[in-house]
Image (tube, rainbow, N blue to C red):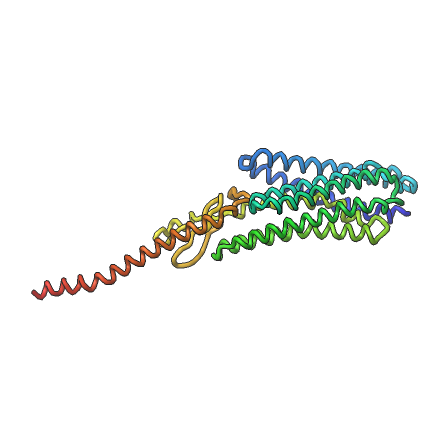
Length: 342
């Protein structure tokens, strides 16, 4: 087996891994600066934990590629060996993917309060992590890439579980968000934006895991590692993108306060503000950079119903006043005219 066949895909995958590591660093910096005083301590520690695991994973991959392609250049026997530097990458990737999926399982719990859906996501996420750690142990036991196909049961458990967990998270979140559309254009556009973001981020990791599994099962060389090496960074960027995008998911009614005579009340309540509807047009102003947590949609339906009832009562009151005024004005006019004639 030549270096081109065995380590060529690894080298390309390592390049993608480094590029995505730069994105992880940028996303982490933005998060820690923006949400330093807003998010809870455990969430910030969780982000730091993922960052450290990714740094270690990238460093170990770099050390393995340098040792194999530089220090052991043209050493075919060494290229066939599975070292600890290579094998531990699977375990670290599984830890990252499992941690991210458990975070989204927590989000599912906050949004749906359905313990069975949460349990389903947790089981598949843990199974994927166990499969990744088992793949590392079995790869070390095999000792050579010539026996790499012998550990396929662990690899299948790892990648299939990870893919199923990603799909479950995406389907559950999309289903829940679609059920909580308000019927108002501004809030529905916001929900659609979050749905698109959820589908896109879940689709990236799912497709990468599926392609990794297919190439592993169908191709005997290391082509699958081209997709496996950057996998941990894709999961981390999925999480960081979700956390950092919360700034654009808030409503603001301050812009409508200048036209208070037309304002009838807030439509959708989030932890960042409200969206106001006017009698002239159903418009809302978005505030970017607000501190809106992912679980803001838990009580959307309650706030919506309360605000609509208040709006309807105000509209009925205004309508009754108008009717009373309309019916009273002719009578007053006739009385006045009669008095003047007398």
